[in-house]
Image (cartoon, rainbow, N blue to C red; front, side, top):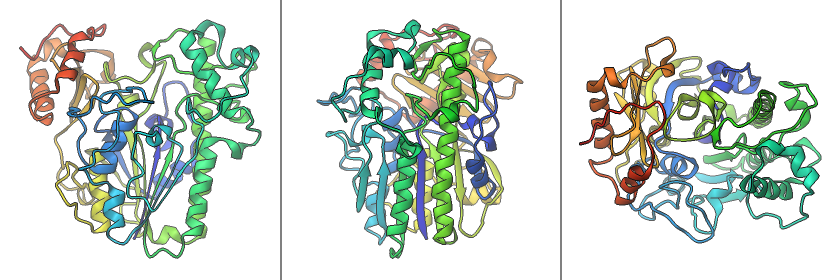
Amino acid sequence: MNIILVVYDSLRKDCMGCYGSPPWWEVKTPNFDALAEESLVMTRAYPESLPTLPTRRALYTGKRVYPFFNANFRLKGDFAGAPGWGPIPEDQDTLAELLSENGYRTALIADVYHMFKPSKNFWRGFDQWMFLRGQETDKYRSGPEPTQEEIDHWLPKEVQNPRRINFIRQCLKNMHDRVREEDYFNARVLIEAARWLEENQDAEKFFLVVESFDPHEPWFVPEHYRRMYDDSDGQEQVVSGYSTVDMSEELLRRTRANYSGLVTMCDRWFGHFYETMRSLGMLNNTLLIFTTDHGHSIGDFGYIGKRGYPSAPEVHDVPILIRHPEGIGAGKRSDLIVQHTDLSALILEMAEVEPKSSIDGISFWKSAVEGGAPIRDHVTIGWGSAMTVIDENWWMNCKINGRGVFLYDLNADKPFENNVADTNDDVVRQLFEKGVADAGAEFPDFVVKMAEGQADAPGCSDLAVRE
């Protein structure tokens, strides 16, 4: 059986119609929704650690990255995106390596430029890997320099600062000559992935990983997609400030419209890839898995960006759709609590490949399809100096030193409106102990220092759960 893993970056689960809609409006995703109708849909799936590279390291190996031991990377030519932001350790096998050694033809088609920097090795084990350059601040082009007028068009004066100006300047240099929809990144990635399918029909069995950095910011999208959600002719806005909302309601609406339009564009080109699978007869012999690394806050709780503290569902909840070629699980929804490492275990199970050493993931396929017992009673998600522990009833987020606690009752009508830590200190302590246990009961010194130097977030409890 062939296996295809499709990963989008910063795709909000609630921006896929099969999962509902975000607070602002419904986002059109007919192709994602069509896939969901033919798939097992996981409703309570989470990353293992965040953001971009730690997530992929866990997904590619099935092993925990949290609590980031031997992961304080300061590599030349790169920035420290977060603890764990580095290469896959040489002593850890990747899915691609394991499957390649067991007769699979393996390939990676991606534009996630962080994976391909000189210090990185996320392409290990792939018989073919294709890096489509130019996303974000990839040093793809040195010119021509954009004019101030061009910068002002995409970056409103009211949100400009030196960092954002430099960011948008490199983005515009990389993307300045796009004239057709097919020139945009998400289209190019899925077109190349479809072409790979056409060129590799002779493979006895294959493992293809498709990585689209879209709908990650900057949210450049052809105008007709944006106008689906905002038909006005006002100021553009395509960046994420990673801060509290610092723009007008009109600009926030435009930001959401550009993001929504980019999600719909991703859906359109996924449809091209999916129809290629259909025309080649590959839907009949291929397991297709769809997920994302994380979502993105766009005005939710007054914030724009991604963060691990305080954590929130629009970032930490992720979709997982699994389409089996025999229709097993089609149309079924499962509320088992699972993580990306469990998806790694499921892929190895489906390929009938045993890992050379133990992994942390647990395959959930049989339990989800047959309505069996849960494989986990909780998950712990690591991001920098913070942990998020989630079980059937509670969502707890705090720094790894036990300070700055948020606790949410998932059974409440609006769970994330009220921090109930102060009235449920026993629950907080139980969940914190589970998070510490998942870390192996200790944390690297550099992460401990990060926690000590990080201020408690507004609205947190004064409760300290680690003495």
